[in-house]
Image (tube, rainbow, N blue to C red; front, side, top):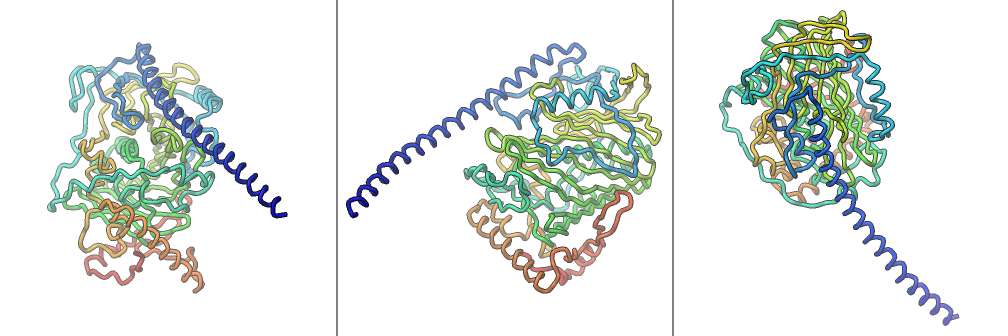
Length: 560
């Protein structure tokens, strides 16, 4: 019996060594395969660029220019690419929808056919069957905004950038991002099909800003809203609003790290009335599902929104679908606009360099005049002849008659102009001619050194700067986020686990006392039903600024 056991042990050891060799062989093969995939991805990116150059040479209707397309940096840093200025562009013009419906046609969060050739061809066929607006604009000589004279002359607004200086000296740098390597796939490989908002992720994949601050950062181009508030032309005002909605996506070309998920009851205030003319307040009003309520006041405008989202990991990409509505009201005209954000796709999760695309359609509705702006964010394609990150739009009145057209990219600028004349080419094509296209929004590129600081913009650098007098629940007070900004990532990860566990314990105590998460009441917002969008919205009570003036934070919970 003893001999038999010894023979069995020897046999197991022998077979174990064989299995170890087999496993090691498979590991080596997997590593070789990963390297091959990376090489193929790099070669595909280079081939894609060559195809774009070749396809542009064949377009006789489009003349070359020297405008640099900066969004190619998000795909590869091998070389820069230049795109042509379009003298004519096509806009799918769908049938006018009822304003009561007020639904934004966004990409389904559950789509599993993204990247499939058959589905792309079907989508192209559907677009070909839709009425198409072919917009032509006159070409004039001269230059504007340092654009070479080979491009059409455009009128630019003088207030799309900062025009005043803050009374306070604000910082222009933060510690550079440490070079800590970690395998993203090792974190999310078991998360396919799950809601990523419920999965703990180390700070290594984050940026030292909370979602509250990231939403506030959309006001970087608040001067576009200031320009909109100065016009009494409803269609021009809607054009500026559309340009502002596009500007909020400009940083996603280079910002691929996720912001911190706010804790329930976490707040963020940003008072820039002394230099930028606006102040904003945001609060995490729900945890499951995560929801943020914001309220901002500027020079003649008020912006508030309910931001919640659905996120799913689909293996090849991560789909982020915003679900809440944004509201914008102008004092001079009384116009009330609403819209929903489009879907964001994070690509190359497994292999290759991460890059972000924003796709879908956005309906911006003026509930006062019943005018509508339909924006289309074109999905990036290796084989498309269009300029990457392209956005087009058409503004129609209550009678579905086109009044303004918009064109540009969400990484560079948006131009717009009134429709001067229209003509029907056939049943599926309408020709519109417009002159005096002007720049409604143009991206301001951050200094080169900020690339090492999470690719932050000037405003993003300032958002997490320590501010005296803010609420104890303010994102600036969050310890794990502050440690990450200081480059102490190991401590930040430990602190992140601590504050999240504290939040879980607080929720358990609330449940024991018979008041679950659903019964949590925000401190600075009140939930109301909005008849315009047929949905709930959290409305700001204005009590925050009164409490700050008195420095009375007795209603704030201890969340950190």
